[in-house]
Image 1 (tube, rainbow, N blue to C red):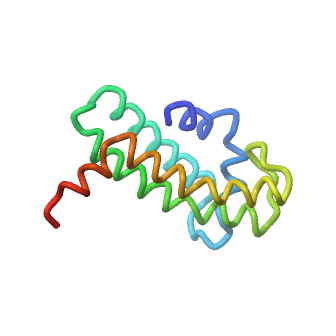
Image 2 (cartoon, helix red, strand yellow):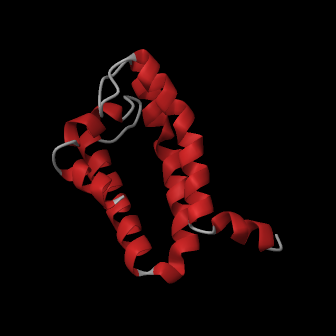
Length: 119
């Protein structure tokens, strides 16, 4: 998360801007900066405030859901960014987002939390 956040602010900034769907009514650079801040905060929280890892895992999973339209837009628009320069690679990337969400929930203990909660 921290490495991705740094990319948002520096060397991958244009690539992340290319993933922001055109229908988002906010400046693409602002979206990239704000999402980078979110990633930085979540990454640092996971590293240093481990007692909150379940909550951070849930927030991170929600974040991954919220940025998924950017992955879809990248595929639909054929945008080359972040090493995804073919339709096939962009399509394959779409299938990894649910895996990423699951791994986030699993590795932070959020799945166990949900299973043991009396909802």
